[in-house]
Image 1 (cartoon, helix red, strand yellow):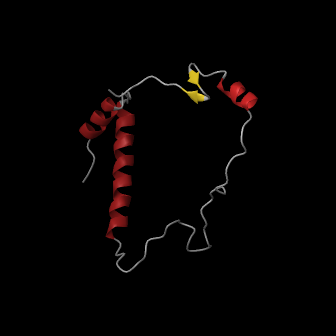
Image 2: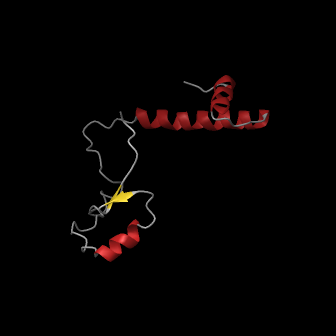
Image 3: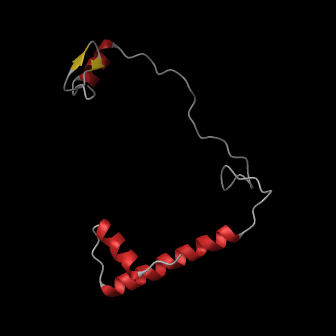
Length: 102
């Protein structure tokens, strides 16, 4: 599947991007090059190859970089009041928000 000048013009119009004629030609060539690379990748036989969870997992052990699941220290009433001072509306230390679903 090749990208045409009409395709480039349509996408540029939808994206609200003004492209000159030389820019449209360059964009057409670049997009067709990208599609060519995708076709090359799809042509590779990958049957029997297990997908990797991370590109570096073939070279090293990758662990999820998550923080420890520990409770935050309790806030004092004074700290909570300071944090809630900028809230447009609050009640009993909770943010009040307008109802958006009927």
